Image (tube, rainbow, N blue to C red; front, side, top):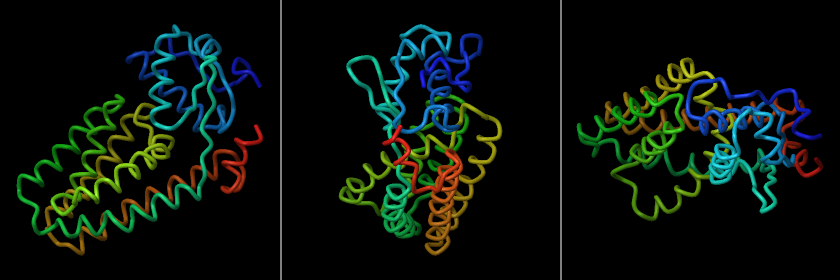
Length: 243
């Protein structure tokens, strides 16, 4: 089905915010609600017409979406939504749940007051930036700071690609641009609970809080993936392959 016939893509020409952020949000929203399902091809000219903007922000948005792993671009100015797989998500989080809670617990007693202040600062910085795309960098740095000072360079080499891979899924579910106030209020509170756990310097509390946070995020994403297409979650990737 051509993009022009899709009911869900809305013009962003009259909305306030940077054109690239708005295009990023609208394409991501269309991926999230199934208007652009995994494996479905679309073109830059179709996007510019549907969104009511020039090709420049569309191309920049698509480059960012490709870097995030959400779309795959071709030299012919076409793209497809990257297929997602719930088993892939489970594998990513199985590794994260094995490593991150333990490193956070090991860090608990060695964390200084300055370290805790830095965690709180990163939460403020991340959620003060909503609805900008700038939200994601301090959010990622916050999760890195949670495992310091225990994390070695080898730990970080393992976790960085896992963070890249999981963010691809996270960006589809936790959208700071679509509902900025409710997003900032709820997700900010969740991350403040992690700061409170770190402030306690109790390794068991820190371990449990990080595990709960990652496990809850994983389940939210799996539930959302299952609902998007109206199919069982195992068909998410297959749906893209047959589109």
